[in-house]
Image (cartoon, rainbow, N blue to C red; front, side, top):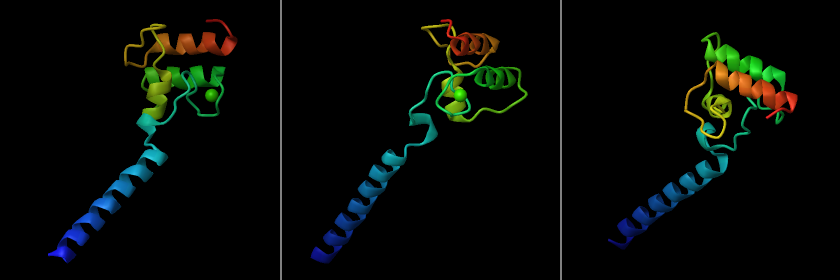
Length: 98
Ligand SMILES: [Ca+2]
């Protein structure tokens, strides 16, 4: 009986450790996302706007991280979609105009 309890506790401990490690690695959807940075280089450039437009018109598929980074429009109230409006905002961000 004690052995069974120890085995259950050991399994629970391993499961908790797995959840903890997964949290450290963080799947793309929960990873830190820089708004407007679609290529993941840490900067918002015209290239990011170009990638956003490609996604918006269906010429490229977005990763979950890119989708989160791309959704910047309407400014202050992102709508959960990636459209040409997001590309326009990212283009302005890259130019230093907000
Ligand atoms: Ca970038």
